[in-house]
Length: 165
Image 1 (cartoon, one colour):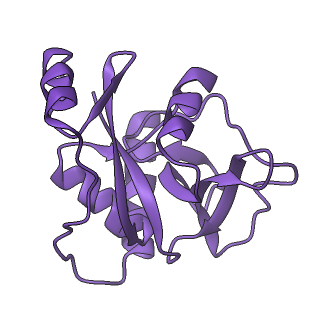
Image 2 (cartoon, rainbow, N blue to C red):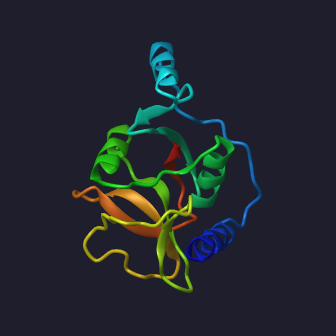
């Protein structure tokens, strides 16, 4: 029942955050051919980075959170989720700028969850975050000197990190 509730919340967040038509996205990072071949051996498609049984992809196009999630879904994944500090450190090696990952909050319950429906176990929020502002319900990383998490308006245009299992 909790999983169904989380999926309903995810759909509500995507619907609320996305007041725009879907468009095709072309600006993704590609890697050297040798790295692509190595990654394919590790179970990741070309352009994706393997880490701890999952595949990650940096998308440099600046998109709203909802468009970034749809873009990741077009690749067969979701915006990235972190299970632990090692996952987060790996993502931070990919990008040092403000970037979307897959956390969002349902306005009705103020519960944070990942866009793939998994629970958010070990949040790495900046001090005083999330601050509960109603218009700020999407998760941005690399905030301030601590490179921590901040809730931001979903309409902000940022690069993103996708994940595939």
